[in-house]
Image (cartoon, rainbow, N blue to C red; front, side, top):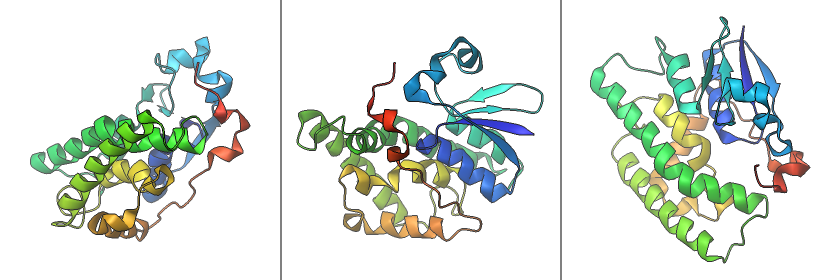
Amino acid sequence: MITLYNYGPSQNGYKVRLLLAQLEREYRTVDIAIFDGESRTPDFLKKNPMGAVPVLELEDGTYLPESNAILNYLAEDSEFHSDDPLVRAQTLRWMFFEQEYVQSSIATLRHRMLTGKLAPDSPVTAERRTLGQRVLTALNDHLGTTDFLAGGRYSIADISVFAYAAFAEDAGYRLADYPAFHAWTKRIRSQANFLDDVIPYSVDPLSVRELG
């Protein structure tokens, strides 16, 4: 059986859990207390030298870090990936977009605001919020022309972007300002076996710490 090394409130872990639920695939979970240093131990660093979760352990003992890489691996030969080279490239495009732009704006801002590490009126907040507005505008414009991000059907591109961008209101955005994007989030939630188990940072009193 595969094993997911995970930190509950991480939406990167949620991406993987969502796809596993929709694949109806069994797996084991090992919780990693990242704010208590468990992802920086010598044992964990053998699994991911960068000390980040999630990490997927395959049946043969191979470790696969990075949430989007895990999505690509798990979705192979499933309805959540495409055999068409262009659609696959478009899928990767949006997953790269998520990693480069969503993570550095909405995801980071959401985490730091929910854990009290960043004041709503700080210059850093304003800078990241501006980038997040550009991100949401780009998504809204694209989703005004198609139901899903890549190839016109639900895929791991949607799972990847949804995990953080759909919760942009936690970072101070109004989804109503981006109607096509907002409608897309509702389409994602209506998919079969959708996993509605986003875990708040409040379950971890150590989340107010900075990562070591």
